[in-house]
Length: 140
Image 1 (cartoon, one colour):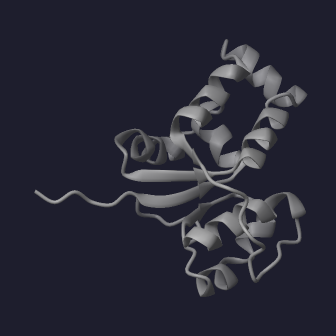
Image 2 (cartoon, rainbow, N blue to C red):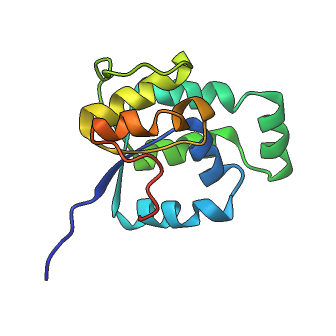
């Protein structure tokens, strides 16, 4: 019996919201992959801080309230599934949105798949591929 190595992935904040706040059906395969251990979610303390900040945005608070879902529960999912890494060195390519750079840097450092819906990240697909980073790979 062979044990497969988990796929390293970096998830931006919108993907994390899809997983545990918006309960997006498209995120179900990724959530299952995390829970089964076939995905190794790499993150940094700065990514957790960003998530905590976003969970306090009025439109997100409204959604959390509607679902009777405390923000602490979402942060607990982060704490349970994300494997904290030190901040990564700057990647060879810069994102126009500085808030997204930390996700790119970490994905490049670990040659991890990067999951994002951000337009400023999506337009970097070819550059990220040159660094060995698959952007939003279809296979989980």
